[in-house]
Structures are given as C-alpha cells and as structure tokens.
Image 1 (cartoon, rainbow, N blue to C red):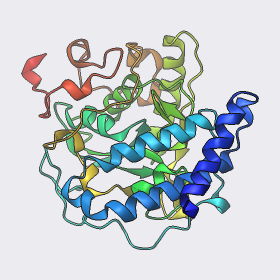
Image 2: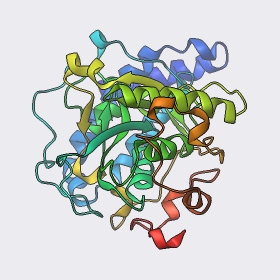
Image 3: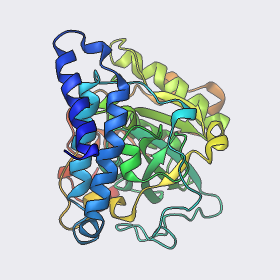
Length: 332
C-alpha cells in the first residue's frame, strides 16, 4: 500500500472505530492529514482531465472533503493561522481579463461609483447564481475563497479545510440601481444561517456562513438584519461569521478568485445541477422594522416586495432549476 493510501486508510479506520465509542473526539488531525493527500493525489492525477471535463473532479473532491469532515464530527472547527497551508504569491491563473459568462463584464473590474459585497453561504455555485439573476444593478458576480489564512489557495487546498477559507461569492454592484440590502436579503434567505460549519450535506469550515464588510454601513446593516432574521427564525441562533475585510489584510487579503471553471459554473454546458444550501422559506422582516434610523433613506431596498413574493428563495435549494438569465423587471 502506498504511503498516501496508508495514511488515508489509517485515518478512516480510526475514525470508523471511534464512531462507535466517542464520536465527538475523532481527531481533526486525522481529517486534515488525509484531506491534503486526497487533494494533491487527485490534482496530480487529473490535471489534464480537469481541462477537458472540469465538471467531474470538483464534485468528487467536494464529496470526499465532506465525508472526511462528517467523520470528524461534522463541524471540525477552524484551523489556526500558524497551521494553515503557506500558499503562494502567484494569483489564480486565467482570471485576468476573464468575463462573466452570463453578464459579459470583466470579473475583476469595479467601475467608478460601484461597490463590492462578499458573502459565503455554502456551495458557491448556487449562491452566485442567486445574485447574478437579480433584475438590475449587478455588474458582475464571482466565486472564490474568502476569510482564510493561505494566500492564493486552490480548490483542492480550500476543500481540505487546511487554508481556513470558506467558499464565497463576490458582487460588484451599482448602488444607484440596487441596494446592498437587496443583496443582503438574498444572502440570508438563500441558506440556513443557523447551521454551523456547513450547509446541507456539505460539511466543514469551507462551507461556513459568512458576511464580510468593507465599511461601517455594511457592518451595521449585517448586524441589524442578523438580529431581525434570528427572531424571524423563531429565535434559533444564527452562526454566521461577521468580520471586516481588513481583518484579513495580514493574510494577504479577504478574497481570492476561484479557478475559471468554477466561475458561473451552473450556467455552463455540462454543469451538474448541484446545490447544498438550505433556504428556510422564511422572509427577512421589513427593512423599516430593523434598519438603523440614519441608514433607512440611504440604503432603502430597490426591489419591491412583489419581486420577493414571486422570485424569492423557497424552502430547499431551487436556484439550480431557474433560468440563467437575469430576472425581468416586467415579471413581477
């Protein structure tokens, strides 16, 4: 048996045995030891295959990562910065000049007067799609790895839980056309923020819920809406991580773009209609009931309640079934 296989087998054997005696005490070290080997072995064996059929290997790695995290007890916690992978200075290849598959704009550009929002709520494929379909004001969306400790991580590395990143989506939007609050509402309603370190069958720190702010207005709106949504959910505790983008400057930055084949994945031919998010079918309470008084005029929602009644998330993940084009304003 090769060293890699032996390491994985040992981890799985001990985890399986422990499951009958002390499930919470299965060591995260077993998982984090095996996961990088799985990722690197998969990557080395399938680099060429990924180019030819990029839809196959991500699903396999996602399943393996989730299985290992489930064996560790389901949440595993966060790796510490000093134990995280070292990363690299080179940015993700293929992102320079890359255009949005649906909207056509360059992923990296932020036009004058436009703003940026970053969230994480489970598998980033469906999360991103729910935002690019908004009827107006969205310049681009992108998927990537955020709020971790490893500069320029790869998908394999992020899936190992050894970088500290969560799968996230980045939105470049025109605040004259759409409000940050509209994007924030879609974020809350598109998943179950009460789940810890995972979403649905996807388990691990790479699937944790997170809201990351770039200014004080965003922070206050996130915190106020969280409190309101927690009440709407019947008092269930929201586990969403809330942090400033600047908190990650010492690790190279909050955000790193994912590989090109992940960008707008669900709109591409051959994509598998996968989504792990768990929308609860519960609406965020009306803006005027929870917004800070001095932010009500500046950040008033641009999308009417009629939009949410017809196109808002329903219980269970359904975004994969929807058309890829932005929703028409005439449809609500």
